[in-house]
Amino acid sequence: MNKNVLGLVLIPFILSGCVKKAEEKTTEKIENTAITKVKELPPKEESVIPAMIARNFVVKFEQPKICGPNPDVEGIVCTSKEAIALKSNINWIDEIIDKEIRKDYADAFTPPSEKQKQLNQTQAEGLNNWSDSVAYRFNGQFGQYVQISKVSSEYSGGAHGISTFEDYVFDLKSKKRIRLKDIVVTGKMNPLKDELWKQYEYWCQEKDMEPYISKEDFKVSENFYISQSGGITFDFQLYELAPYVLGPVSLELHDTDQLIKPEFLPPRPALKTEV
Image 1: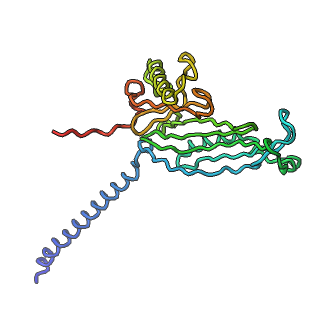
Image 2: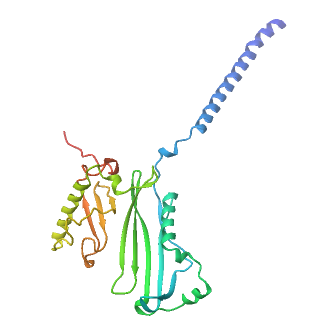
Image 3: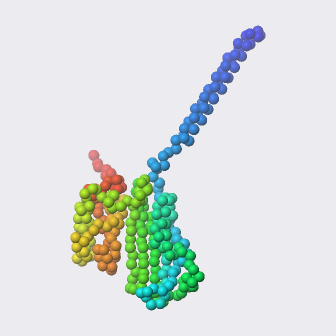
């Protein structure tokens, strides 16, 4: 075969191979660029609302029992200390709870002196066995709002102890605690009070009792939580609205659309209508 002819035959194959390699490199470059762009543009963390997962645990104290004299009581008083905290995937909420416990139980976190160690071995008698405890509970989440309850119990002699309750609503977006003033529609605090008073009167009728306080002395509780149905429940402490024997009082409002800002109410399921 003529050398010139052979050269002409080979040229298309060589050019074809070059074009193919160029195309492969171009494709590879495009793919690498796409991968790089994906890596450079991660999803914005602030747009993702995490689902809170929490468990309870008993806080370890240096002094789970503290004994010593008390000016109001004869003999040695021994107070048992206990705190049940939360461990969750929302660190800033855990830190708020931890800070509260460390403040309220600072003495229990303090290592005892040798003298205090000996005192703590004391076996107190009868009503001199006191107790002081707190427990935090995760009560659920709707959207960006997490709800937690706190129950503090204290016994310092006498016929019975006393418990106090506190409700927390946390906003995962703003990382703040939601207060009563945040959820009530502007100018609607008095109408809210009126509606709660009506619920209190109904509650008293069910218990066959007169109101424990007057309407003038009635105040909207700062302790509240929001139900999935869209209602809002207000918790009142012992003795606030009833005698001790009836326990703490909870008043729930269902028609809250005109009183509570809509962003703080969970979406209600749409009702299907037949055509």
